[in-house]
Length: 346
Image (cartoon, rainbow, N blue to C red; front, side):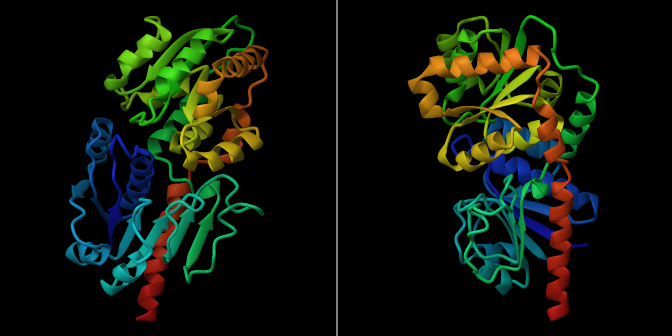
């Protein structure tokens, strides 16, 4: 049995996107016979729930990556953490293992035996990924085909296929999700925008309970509030419209086939936002600072999106065609290839 060590955190401060996609890769690896251990800190309640349901062991990330790889007899170390440095490959190689590194444009960039930049358009001319300097890395996997998504997302995609878009109705219901931890406090801002937008009938906000008071203050008592949890994908599959940060959730929503409006809440989401909106796979509200400075324009954009859905002009099919949900399978195939290459070199 091959052994993988996954270096990843899941905290309210750092968000849960890294953890979600790392768990997707781990899920696929275990399906094909790998043993997987996580090294990191998971303090978010939703993150702990994800780990518990995945059934993976989480150990402290004590020592450098080489020490961790040796301690857990890893054949491969998979890193999904921007703060791990460029010395990671050397450390891992010293323990006889290979390194797989997730990066997002220039964020988290480091030499590795397998590099994955799963952003939409990362393989196209002009992308930050194609401008990546030659640092001796092995396989470099670019583009949305390598976005790791959990099996639950593919199941939600199948359920969504039987759900009709709200063409011909009078109003649209909106599901708001600003990340598992809502580290920027964007839920309150977007809930307020939704309440002032035309053609919006009901608003459900998925956010940690610590954010609920701010949401109620900004948008009133008529907003439904729910904690992040396993029911999110069910809600997304049944939603008329979702407003989301341009994070890992973007690829889940595109794969499911639900009409989505995106917000770039933090700088490292901007390249995802730009790529997805440019391809027509989602509509855009702009950056969080822009929305806070001019909520009326954001509400107008959201109202127009709702009106298009009611007129039968959904854009969801574009995302559905672009994101097939098989990225985790492709990443694990690259894991096997890198380990095989190391064995061949002796």
